[in-house]
Image 1 (cartoon, each protein chain N blue to C red):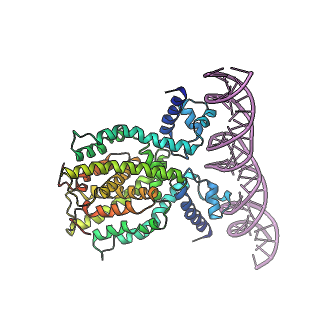
Image 2 (cartoon, chains in turn red, blue, cyan, green):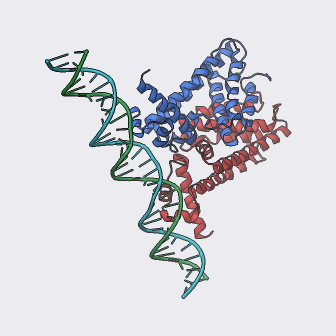
Image 3 (tube, rainbow over the protein chains, first blue to last red):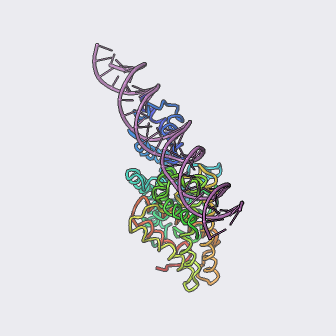
Length: 197
Length: 197
DNA sequence: ACTTTAAAGACGACCGGTCATCTAATTCTG
DNA sequence: CAGAATTAGATGACCGGTCGTCTTTAAAGT
């Protein structure tokens, strides 16, 4: 990787962190370049606009998360429903250590969907990808008989993922793990397990 | 109501609408006063700061919604679980007519929780109130035997409300009613009904 | 020397918030 | 009750500062 790509990456990583906690409109270009210790004038050599940066940051945010989550979600050594449970539960750490930011995609969805059609479409796509990953696991569980719900895996996945986003959002306001615990408590019920404490 | 209160109300109503679609940082004082056709200088005679306005708008947003929702949620002519179902389903209209804004409280939660402690606490309180209202209905359903879940009403309410917020958020990005349908499809499962199509 | 890229700094617009000024209502005086 | 004095509230010009963006200059690469 060349020098240029490295700097763009640095800008993306650090800027993403800033924008994840202060939002799109709450983050200035100066905030981004300051955090990355990159001269202000350089910003527009890497991104053609602030919106362009946000679009790239959105992709980056999911890349980082997908590294780990895809690996877990597709790990055939663990029963599919167990994978799902871990996928959600492993978020706990972020909560305990005074999480800030929450889900960057969720944040951008709320703040920018009505202001930028480009960002809305990108968010929609990333949300769909995430939902699809969950649906795949559910479909696998259905095939091996551990998923008994009469509802389609698509509906189940859509519900679960949205419920999860709501849970993460709530944790931002409450700063406690109750929302997460409630989510995990209901997970078996939703996928149709009698009781898998 | 005196003239002054009326203007403050106007500022609150119109400003709330603007801030609900463009967010806190995406809305300027000028945007608010222009929408209400109130002179810029007047703003600070009604609110001591932008943050103060947002706090008041947050209360206003729930007042408006609570007018109708409380009445529905506490209507003893309808079975409690049916009330809950309607409470969520009645949101449909907003979706069909190209909803903008979503849930103002949810928006502010995502955008401002990490920036303003005052707003975070207000959001947390309002979210709790909403959850409590749902818990009350669930408790009523448990008493009359229609709620069979072994999980506590508090956990159920927390999960349901967060799932709902996530659903509303997803609709902002997707601009379709699929998320809502998925939510409504799972509602009976969550509260422990076998199938109450 | 010539092309390409990074960086500096300027740009006008706009930000949240303040201020002196003006208006209109209230209180005081007779 | 009339008219003068006082004051609370309304107002838009204006503050220093920051915004996102762009032009211009400096540096680097070949």
